[in-house]
Image 1: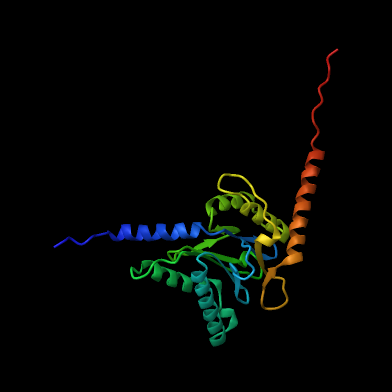
Image 2: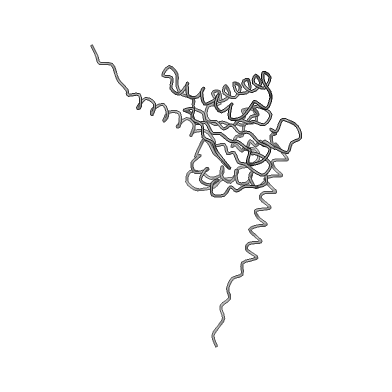
Length: 257
């Protein structure tokens, strides 16, 4: 009689985590930034049919990387949860924190179940508040843990390098154009430290705008509006560079008699 093959629970969970991380890293990154009037979502996504960023409820949006069919199932489940809770109780009872807890339970159950493979997804759930201090951003890795983020966050692809770049340059009170330029600059950096050019056609951009008069704060930034924002950000950056160079005078050497 052969001895059954044994794998310790710790090793089994480590293998499942490594499997999920590798799947997530193969996807293109998504960046989420706070700016003066809300929260902006920027994803490298040339597809106009398969969205990485979507609306969940009035003030709540969802972003994801990884396997599309898996995070799309989670998105649909989140919309159903929000609609049911808002209808049963009150629209104000639907919060990003409550939705993040539901996603955490789902992802944690799937990750710890030996009967199925872990989901190869990483999620961001964000809610825009009345002011910047009321904004909420939650990151949910594949194992169902919840990370409360502030300012900026990146998932998928080379997320560690992008997050480090954002942490050094993000600041409170940025305009939408400034935040968008920072997000695009971070996504343009590759693993080797080089840079590439990303056009409006390669980007999926959406915002949660706290200044919108209607209850639904989610809005996609498309076509001409996105191109104008990118152009205005580039021109503003160019004018700052030129003013800095004009304000710096090179020392002149005086000849001795």
